[in-house]
Length: 193
Image (tube, rainbow, N blue to C red; front, side):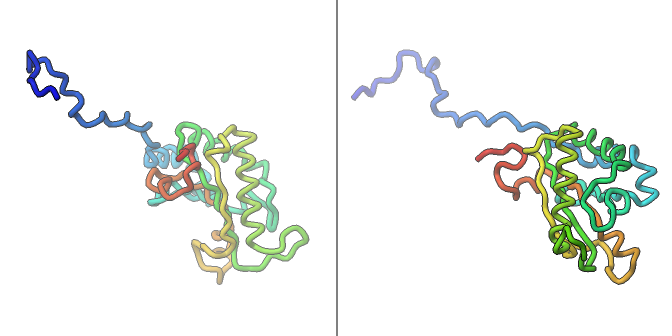
């Protein structure tokens, strides 16, 4: 056992006693307030005409894509006339790495056609159709995208009037906030445990 002090105590390497250096800071998150302002400016006409809705929530920036603009009644095919609107939204999404969830919603009237057995199926099919368009036509990385279907269970308006039902029929494109990403499965947005 050697308990002699070092010959020159001023030259002792004290780095062994220091805490480890913190990891480098993560990439800056998307400034969702700035994205909201950009989309409000770029989609002013669509907002005023009610084709889309925009709002900033704790979970992220929500872009509501109304059925009348993006889908035929009871169908999941994205209307080709809506692609110019989607191009503006996709350009904003491409500017940062936040995950995007596409959430399908319907009104409370049961669907009656040969393609979909329920509003659940329709809401998910529309979310998937929108995901595929964002991925294939606009090049949004698939690992950033997810879908959810809520059918009639998350209305934004009453289902007692035609106007209310029309507002409820939508796909919400949610650009997830950094806080919301924390509650998502680990691989969403490229985070691997």
